[in-house]
Every structure is written in structure tokens, then in C-alpha cells.
Image (cartoon, rainbow, N blue to C red; front, side, top):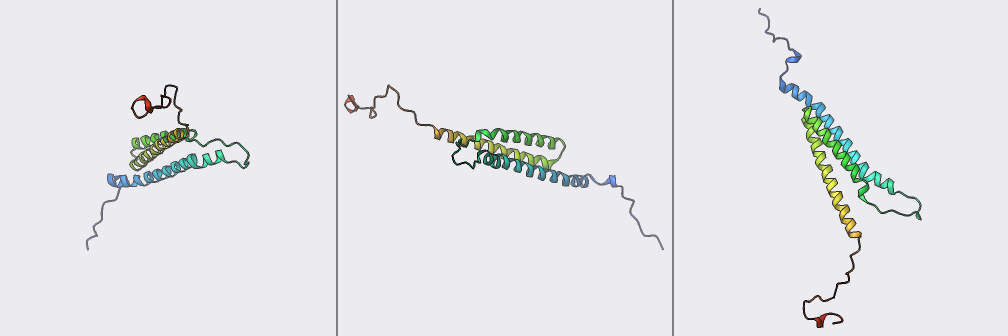
Length: 152
């Protein structure tokens, strides 16, 4: 009888590049998920918990200061900067999943930052009184002769 054919011994370093790429993608995806979870938590703390604790007052007679996003938006900008640094570092390390997830988080944080700025500007404008007419106002609006104007 002839011996059964056997395959050559498998060298663990000889796995194809495709197999090594898939093996590296697991930790990459895990790192991307953990970073996204941490960043969403930080964003929630900055925009929800911090303002709540900042304005929490048990004394009803205590003076209330108006709520404004300007106090919290710099922290959102710092978080966005950290996310972009993480995206660049992940791209340089060829961690594709982490780089893409960090870029998506950067876009989300930029949208939150721009939306918060627009919302606060709108609130600031709405809170201002309409300016009163100045001394040169005659009250003539129709464009007709002076018989329509008050006092004339």
C-alpha cells in the first residue's frame, strides 16, 4: 500500500495577505466601536448633563441665569478636534474601520457645533428688543404729499 498523500506543513507566517487583513480588521472594528461609544457619551455629557447640573438649583428664590449654549460649544469643538486627530492617526495606522467611523463622528460633531451656533445666534437675536425709530423719522410711508404725514 502506498502512503496517503499529505499536504506540506503550514507555516503560520505564510497565510495570505487577505487572511492577515481580515485578522487585523477585528481589533480595528472593536477600536472604532469603542471610540464612537466614548465620543457619543462625551457629547451627551457636554450637551445634556453639564447644562443640567450647571442650572440645577433647589432654592426657588435663587436668581436664575439664562441658558446659553456659548458656554458648552467650546467643549464640543475640543471633542471634535480630538476626533479628527484620532481619525488621522487611524488612517496612518491603516485602521480603515476606525478611520471611517472617526470621520463620521467628526462630521456629526461639526453638524452639532454648527447647529448649536445657529440656534444660539437665533435665540440671541430673538431676545433683543426692536430698535426704536431715530429722530429723522417723519412717519410718511405712502410716498404721497405732505398732507398724509402727521403734523404736516
